[in-house]
Amino acid sequence: MLLNLVCDRVSVASAVLIRSYEPMGILDVQACNRSLSPERFDLRDLSRGPGRIGQALGLDLSLNGLRVGNASGIYVLDDGAKPMVTSSSRVGISLAKELQLRFCEEGSPFVSRGGKPGRGECR
Image 1 (cartoon, rainbow, N blue to C red):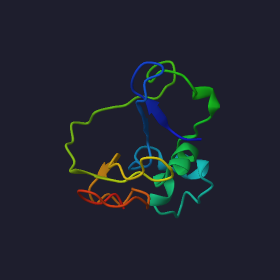
Image 2: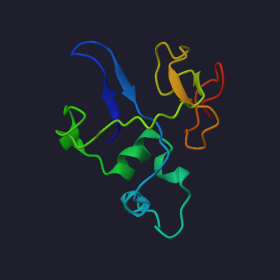
Image 3: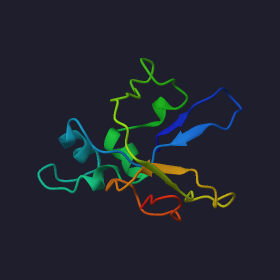
């Protein structure tokens, strides 16, 4: 299960695939969702890659098509941080893969591998 947020109206290409995140909150539950030992695991193993995100957060198809917010229980929060953002080429696609449309926090250890570096590195 992947976390894909659609940002515009129906029939307008505008989705954002969340490929990684910095784990916060109740890490034991996220570790158990990924079948990792809650006592000993690498934080990066929770959320580095879109499939791992879905597992760690316990996502399932019941969320498909729901709006972010009360209907889904998924919220996008702004903590006010202004990280250095960089981009690289997209991964896992066959068309327009040279476009620099993969964005990440520069130097984040939680970003999955892949993509040809652009202005910085999404590695």
